[in-house]
Length: 423
Image 1 (cartoon, rainbow, N blue to C red):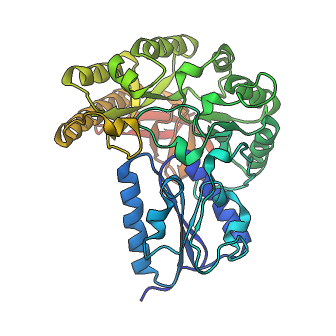
Image 2 (cartoon, one colour):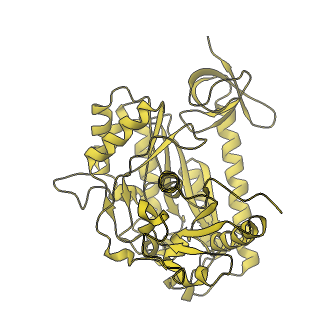
């Protein structure tokens, strides 16, 4: 029999916001004295993500028969009964409850021996607390939550029902968090949330993501690197564009595009069309010629024809995308897209592979372009790190995680970037 888990173990699925919240959970669980526990912070973005969580829960129970298993996150928020019905699970916490320190002081939080579920109506939550955390386990960069929830209702997405409506963290709290993380030695901060470009709409005055970035850069002049998580370009304002004159804002944007076909975008209930995405990328390149783009793309959305999919493949070139996150479409119960005519699963897999191959070609091409150039690399492990463009680099010499060093890049025959300290 395996030795039981003593300190709380956090297993995270899904997005960067979940990674941030897992650190909040880690601190709360430890300060509450919870031990011999495994906490699963789940994702609901696809049916596959939920399946993987269930598989991991069963495996954890087999290896740790005496541990308390707690399930939380978006999948638990949306479908708590299904997790509570699993014999391996002891408790289920909602997305609001998981960030309350009392939740890990059993039974003080109101969970009796016969009650497994503590999940609030997420739509009733009107504020997002700025949880101050000082460290991120095994990470060179730190995430700061600026927003939670989403007011939009894309036809494929279940996340608003797991996260609630959009709500912003006050700017002063965000500034305090970043300063605290810098005091802990972090050189790069990533602003994260569910829909960060909606930041500020619920705050007094005229707050926006652009104005928040300007405030951070003005009030924290010693911050070396500021990075953004995924953005929705249709919500971008002039204040945001003005921020790119400051080189501390990293030249790397990840875009929520989803498709390159106008009819599919309309059926997804997205708020942009392909021409908007292309113009946005062109406008940003004029401001920062070295900008590198990533994007989320869905393969095989209901009703997608070969011609429609070809438009998505073409968009990779037209927007000069480098980092592709490819999602083979899978129907989520309760979403409008699940009731639309579905694409055959074999075709979905084929299209997803075509997009991944396209993405690999784009990444290799970018690596070749950087051969012989110099870059500032944030060290993630002793022999690897990432450039300001988020390109992975293998280092010839050992360095300390969290350190920023200047390197000369070389692209090897496998299209991998290698780096040596630059003069």
